Image 1 (tube, helix red, strand yellow):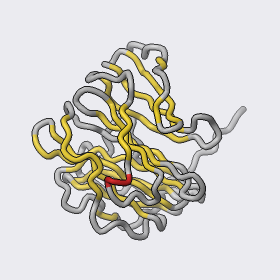
Image 2 (tube, one colour):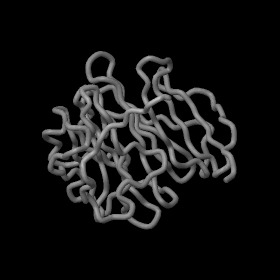
Image 3 (spheres, one colour):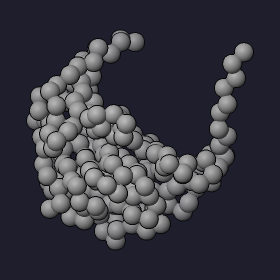
Amino acid sequence: PYTLSLPSFGAPAQQSYSPAATAGNGQRKLARGSSGTLYLTYESEGDIFFTKSTDNGSSWSQAAYLSKGYVPSEYPSIAERGGHIYVVWHTKLATSVYDVAYNYSTNDGSTWRAAPVSLSGAIGSPAPGPTPAIALTKPSGSFEIIVVFRESSRLTSRHSTTTPPASSSNWTTVNVANTTSSSKNPSLWYHPNSWPPFRLAWDEAGASVKHQYFYYSSWSSLQTFDPPYSQ
């Protein structure tokens, strides 16, 4: 018979008392680096934190405080390549008004920016908010980083080839064509061995899952997966 070998984990450790600590359908909260290091981001009491494990989850580093005054912040998403780690989230400014912000580390999470970077400024978005997703390439070579999030009338994205993108001026706005006010829960990933390497999928009004590719600074024509099965 086939035997499945599973990794072992340490005892559970309390990192957050928030029921939405890792909420966000489609957002990446946990990433594994090429060296095997695990990188985790989460929300706790309106703040965003980061921790990592070099022993497959048996122990975790002291949490780094990333949002630093952006309160209340929630729905973080993480991406890592070559020791460069980016965490993006949204901060609620008023009813249905949010700011998408990010922080980054260029030394495998040892240190982070002293203050987060505001990416979007104040934008409108239906509840639960923009729920941004992030993906990036390796910092060496042709670097690219993309953040996709929900606005009131569509999905939009920010694209940068600057490493690291230290301010909002380092980003270009690229709206996601064929999306609507019912487009939500964006999920974004990068596949180095496929073309185009950036892929985006989202929930369209709870009725279907749609996806597009990103290449040459624009999004591809709309494609649709089969509708989800009813449970």
